[in-house]
Length: 461
Ligand code: UD1
Ligand code: CA
Image (cartoon, rainbow, N blue to C red; front, side, top):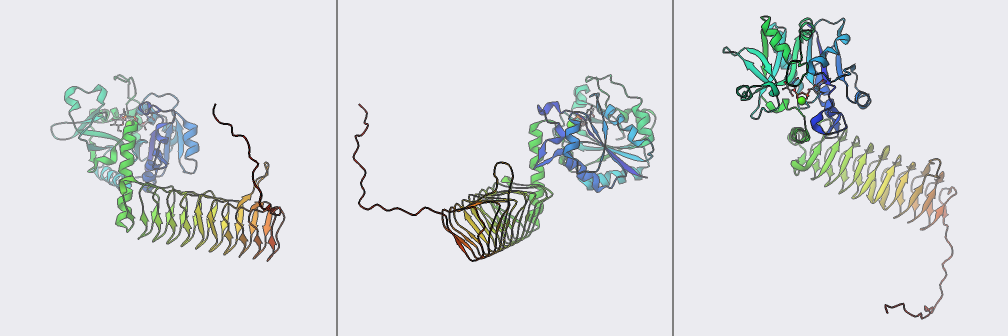
């Protein structure tokens, strides 16, 4: 039987005390919802429908690269109502539907697979994913009868003090046969403490009509931690961080202090790379083998080759760094920076939309923007490209073996030919032919024996 998925993401997340929709709160640099969707894609569903409401446009925009369908819940009437809003998208669909909360980012795809398998084997119409929590506060509790069969779910707010003692909780994940789902949703009412249409009530509806309900217990209860406030957000972040760091360490990466190293799950890092503390590696970054990174480095959506050093306090986004390059300390590589093998980018250097050729050096205090630097070029301390005239950006071309003197201003558009040199302190506004020296300076005046005229000092009276 086919599997499709509905993800509930229409709530504001009041307990977050935020203007940002809850499911967009970032965890290790990615929105919470994207983790749930990652797990969902792994089970290859026929259809994925995300129910959105609060901040719907923002959610769609943020996840625009992810191929899912959306359904709109215009009023916050509860989780049962939210699923009902997705019905239209399943008009021609008959099969199982897995329903998931958008706020439990630790869920693993293997768990979902096991859950679906057990549902299919049971030949039943509805199954629940449950877990045992030492502190079950805030979650719906699973009520079972004397034989251990699931009877219904009671929400914390509606539970008696005896029911509140139950430690088996509802994870917010269900697998339901579509025919029964739409039928049961039609029978929901909002007679409860919150005045909402509760999705969990479909369990009671199932058992009342004599149906058996499957309960699949997740052994690792951490996986179904729901995020309702910022404290839980931090807890979930810590779990994801630990998971990712452990995986990397077991694959041969040294993480000097994993507690203060923040790597998102989508990052890959080669063996024998050492990551020093306080380093953040986010997005789809790929790091090669034998690199030294950190301390206090930020790398996002970048590609780093083998044996690269990225030293203290460097900030790198959307850049490509080839093998054996040396970056930092205090370097800033921005979008479309390409640092080819063996090149060196030193302290207080910013690079944007530029290519730095093999073995070239930009060692100190430079800005290089919209520039192509060839091979074996040396850029002296303090030299910069003046790429912006207040209206447009212009390119600078620096060919192989060029020597740019310290504090040179290269006013773009400009080309410095192969092997040319510029004198320190020059403002270069015209192309420099290959092999030439370009120098732009007033002659130094030296007045010998010059003394400052004595002046009356302005002392305090
Ligand atoms: C829900 C369950 C609870 C379960 C817990 C697991 C209900 C009534 N309760 O509680 O049994 O233990 O999840 O974490 O379902 N949403 C909508 N539209 C709405 C309301 C909510 O789309 O009208 C979405 C939210 O965006 C969220 C998810 O549904 O992603 C769950 O809502 P939330 O308010 O967090 O439910 P809980 O109180 O955590
Ligand atoms: Ca929740």
